[in-house]
Length: 268
Ligand SMILES: C[S@@+](CC[C@H](N)C(=O)[O-])C[C@H]1O[C@@H](n2cnc3c(N)ncnc32)[C@H](O)[C@@H]1O
Image 1: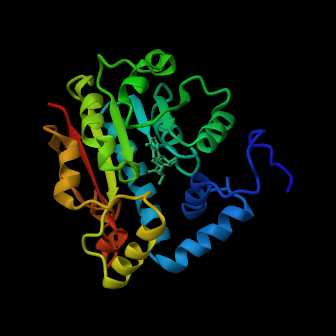
Image 2: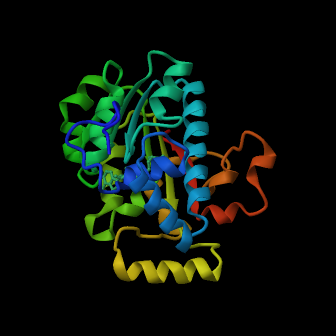
């Protein structure tokens, strides 16, 4: 296929990419036929997947708007994916043009796409790093150049920690990142869970576990630990549509079907 202008050179156009599949699910334009085919296969096994991803992306937008209104003007977005529909720098800079954003992702495809999309934006960059290696992230020159950890900052960990297995010590990694943040900083976390899922989703998850070790679904109590001793803001750690919905009708009849929890905490 022909390489579209936004796709960086060197990207394999014949292999699906997880970031572009996510982009497809959230209604983005940065995906190929090969990604859409994989997305449809995933949807057959886990019919809720598109709803979960959209609910996650919607929460991201609500959260960034809230943070900007609270006066936050710098964001460290870990596991950012392809910055596409309603991405952090767009939402933030629309409300405060001075807002700065550092995106971090482990996936070279997401990083390459991000670099192409962010080209020319002086206040948003992408760094190729593993969230489980916070020292490398904090030592990265792009992070130091754009973010000032002596002032309040928002650390965004949306839809990423369930990709980090326990043996990579995600809890310790998040603690290291939170420790360097100034009082008044925020951390936002969304995380997939099996809590509240119907039996067929549990069965599908067991099947996928045989072939893939990619996603670690954690329970609410376990996810709550990632906020460490920061203060959870209302409404706490809740299923995604329940987190500060723009309209009550956005919650729907089954918020637990989102299959994930989200919350926002502040460092006092
Ligand atoms: C589901 S997407 C979430 C994108 C975005 N944060 C959002 O909520 O809309 C998850 C992203 O996390 C990235 N990721 C997975 N494991 C990671 C790790 N260990 N370190 C950094 N990024 C990671 C994936 O490459 C992918 O782009």
